Length: 397
Ligand SMILES: Cc1ncc(COP(=O)(O)O)c(C=O)c1O
Image (cartoon, rainbow, N blue to C red; front, side):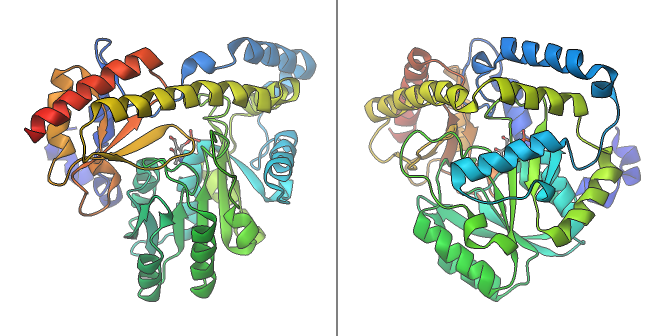
């Protein structure tokens, strides 16, 4: 659209910046570039044959019913499966009635924002934080307050300070293997965050797409165990099975569920019913833990390859945030070095990453960057990190 027609656009849409990451991915997607920039899972692990079998079985057993409209809440067998998984894996009791199936967790952001945010309302997000959530919330024009995250989780002093001086609708968190930093909140940090949420009478969103991808370390308690009445949990099959089905979910308190259902009806009536049935059939016929073992086996091997290459090829003064799982490593370059400048050098050396800038609301920390280790094999990871190390050293000299 030309600028001449810009006045036709809503203020809402004009307030959301163009996706910087999309621009980066466009330049880094050439086949001769070793890209650590993507945020996608490794497609070699997608259970293609098993999904073909599940699809055939769903059609055989349900006939045209599988192709009809369905209810907004989502398929009840799938919701039962999710509730049982919470029980088995995390020991928490979630009623299937408190689960709403969404079009990925990306839609969960939109529905929650629709139901909770009026223009100018305050919300709290992690800094750096997940871009997709920031973009989705922005459309509802809230005032975004930020709290820094580090190896241990949220900065509690900052959180307390922000909550003392505002009245946010919610605090948005990714406590397990966060995107972009890969860090997890420690048990102690979770308890401290939960205490602040209670004290200030607000809600917490726990977005958890990577929690099942743990390579090492102890499982931590869910915010839902600590403050069930104040926690909205988000989940997704995108990183555990496949993202194309676009199946995620919200676990919401009873008082919020009707509003979310209205928001979802207005948005798309319901999540693709056929996909829900196929996902459920797939999960019935294929133990998810076996599939997770394969994902964890490959990703942890590639993560090790990346870490050992970093130790070998990156100069002193570069640090990597501690991570026990997920898909990303967060690198801090020596003070004063811009990852945006490094990005240009790296592209010339045919290697790509995402500079830290787009993940910050407000002033970015210039010397940070995100590396994904999941889609590149171990030998290529070594070569890519070697090239990147050379670029960093050149900038230092
Ligand atoms: C933290 C976080 N939340 C949500 C999503 C979106 O997931 P979905 O595919 O379920 O929409 C992603 C995807 O990368 C993510 O990293």
